[in-house]
Amino acid sequence: MARTAFLTRAYNAAPFLSEAVESVLHQTDGDFVYFLCDNGSTDGTGSLVRSFAARDPRIVPIAWEKNSPLESMNLLLQRVYESGCEYFAVLDADDAYEPEFLRTGIARLEETGADLFLCGSRFFSQDGPRGQRALPEPVTIDRAEFGAWFPPLHTHLRAYWAKLFRLSVLLHPPLFVDNSLFYGSDTVFLLDAFARCRRVTGTPELLHRYRLHGSSDSHRLLPGRFEDDKRQHARTVGILRENGWLTDENRLFLARVFLNACADTAFLAIHQKELSTRAAVLGEIFSSPELHAAWERLLREAPQAPEHDRIRATAQAGFVSLRAPLVPGPGEEPPPDEDALRAALVLRDAAPYCESRLHHAEALLLLSVYARRAGDDRVSRLAARELAESGDLPDKEGLF
Image (cartoon, rainbow, N blue to C red):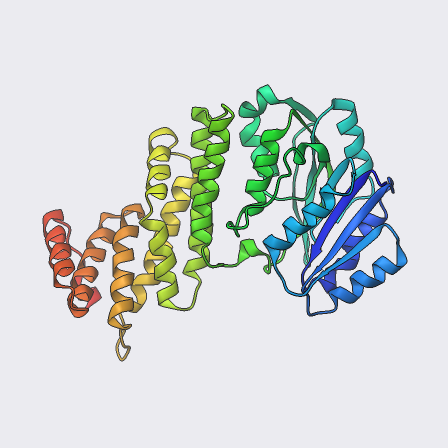
């Protein structure tokens, strides 16, 4: 029976998979089983998986007919849990571990009695090195200190890689991925696992290599992403509350994390081609009570935090991206009434996060005009009344 279980899921990863697999096979501690899954690929990944399995008996080849990221992860976790192994690590199909990763991780877990080992990551792209992420020094943290250590540890608890688990901490009861949460399901899984640990240990050694490119889920606007942002935030708050770690410092920290998530999702929305898509996602974000609550907490407790400026800049960029089609140039046609009204409503919601009060006045004027064009006289009158009561005067000539 092998001592450690490695797991890699690969979907259309043929250009990178060999480097990932070789990095596992060349670990200086070779006592492992390697569950290597072709997750419904169409690019030759499956052939690579089979060829590696034929070459090394430690590899257990697994193939799914279709790409099912969440369901496949739980099926693979079940295989890992049934393996009888003592330790467990995940590697993405486009990343790699340094040869000493496993030996170092096991040594630290055994020396400290910890349930989770964290190591540093070296980031790279096709253009070369792109920085690193690592703890500043070796640490071993007991459960009683988890609350105080949560902010510096949080960035290491966002993804499966660069860590080694004592498998028993995931087994009682078996911990699985929340299939209803597509974006951020790995973070919630890891926070649940973290909450089970008695002790965590980590090293600043850069034992993991992370490949940066634009095809990962974090760089795409997937359906329901902002809803997942909110659910991930709520679940994280819940985990900290359940374990007595929800201090004022951690509340503020999580507000900042959530504001960054809002800005990330808004950035992706701003760069969508269709006005209807931009308006739908930006509308979700800037009308959400969760964003407002996090924003208000930041204004009260940390008004100089960088997230303050980032949300303002994001709101400004979103405002500009939605305003442009509503103010067509000579010879240009405005968008359909329904799309225009939706965009104008979002302008009103985004304006309070912008720097100038004139953004709010301009949004109200556009909302009044496009609501009238769409036949919604009630909204048009309300917007016009609010504009009159505000005393702010937008540049009408610049708009129409």
